[in-house]
Amino acid sequence: MGRVIRSGLSGSRYAICVKNTGYRASLEVRKVYRVKSDKTGSGHGLIRVVDESGDSYLYPEKFFIPIKLPKTAEKRLGRVR
Image (cartoon, rainbow, N blue to C red; front, side, top):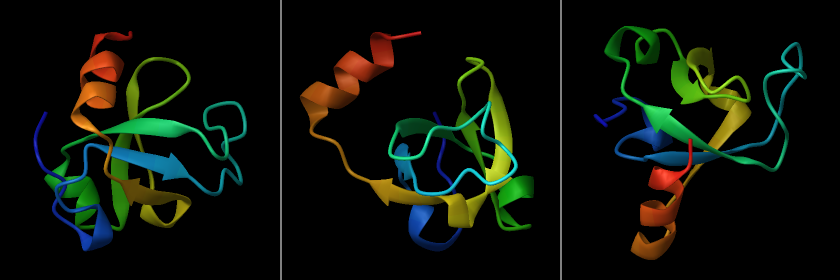
């Protein structure tokens, strides 16, 4: 996984969803999502997350807050598909 290059999400690998307006089928509020690098999207205020479909898509950055997980949690989440 690469780095996300914008605002508070820089370097974060995970973020918690705080808003899902217009994306209720794809995003759950209060759920942790894996963040993937997308330099083009980050330049437009978007971040790439792996959503409920299991694929990664661009969403507004303001819908997420970056979080830092303990290494054990990152390892376990990294194995989940």
